[in-house]
Image (tube, rainbow over all chains, first blue to last red; front, side):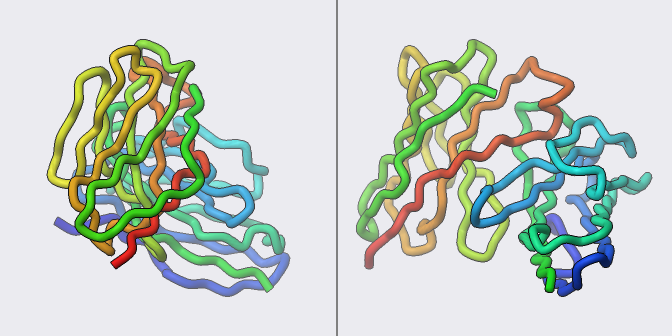
Length: 114
Length: 115
């Protein structure tokens, strides 16, 4: 069974640009969550999508957005990139949105802002 | 979210058991205890979770104190591949809204395994 797939694995952008990251969840999983990991702040929750609807959002500015498609694949977008957006962006999926379900993570997209 | 406290780091020797502690004195009756680990250059990996009773799976065992204010993740025979950051996380089974799909990670315990 294929795991969570994130593309691209590495990305380099410059300040002011925008970026779109992609996540394909495990087949049959309908919930997708996104996290940002930095050395200073650790792992922080960005948002969660279930059945194409954003169910929850972390404490990030509006420059961070996402969406989910009917096949459960998800994308996140960051506009007007800042140096502080350099991070590992992780996607996780689970069958539904219940808090008793393990989340399965991809290996992330490492975004570097120059 | 209820908070957890873990030691910053622990060390072990290969093929020896490892006991990773987690304190959660403010745990509520509907909080499940979840453990994840993150190996270098990888995303976090689910390890195990439980509510009240001790739990076992192919990766580890979870021992939960009778008052549920602490728990211990047990790796029965550590291997070099078990070197990772281990996170203890509480998830309220009844919470909705602002907890949908959200794992609240602390700093975790860095486990070093010596050959």
